[in-house]
Image (cartoon, rainbow, N blue to C red; front, side, top):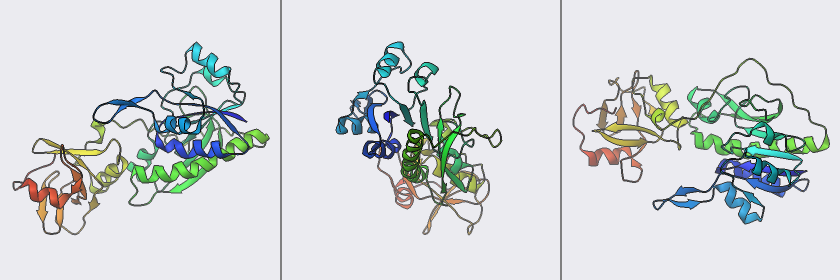
Length: 309
């Protein structure tokens, strides 16, 4: 089939590469978000998907607004049989969805109808789910509601960050997407409507929402920190200084501390929560590189009873 691929960040790369390498399909164009400022100088930089398309010599389209009549006409001229979407970052309108004769297939990183929305991996970890996966479905104008072609499952490990889990789902999901395209091309695969039960929503997590709430129980604090690692990154303030936090460990062996209170000894740095304390791993003070929490505490010379907020 002639396929148009829409994607932007690194988790979309395995799927794009899989379709490029497929002997059965031709990626006739790649759609990605416009170049974004990166680095200290803010130089416009192609997205990871755009870079792969350029390196592979595939036509690259970077519309500011993909649903304009001009862009729809440009896409129609390519005569695509099917569209594939993996973390593109923009909503496709009804007219754009109607261009490929087989519609658009989205690879979504959850077991739909669970965790519809922009942050399904983060939501699954934060909720304490034991199992997640990836789903291919036919895109409809409403959010992640379309009929399902196929799924693949993935166990959530006790120490998984969102980055860890997303890397595995991106790899396994690439195979699922290729198999879905094969089935559509063969006429052997039909989409099945999603269940009306078990629906949950996973909106994008903002930087403000990634601030640690120390009054919550320790297991929830621990999961929420993993859920926003590496992006947007968990953070707190100490002595009015904002500090990023890496994953923490629930400490059931030491006495309880008041929420946010920091305790330092030879075995590490602990912070109080609504239940047990948590042991800090890596921290990143403002303007500095990430470091072990014990190294930070040694240099910070924290006063007794200082709190993270």
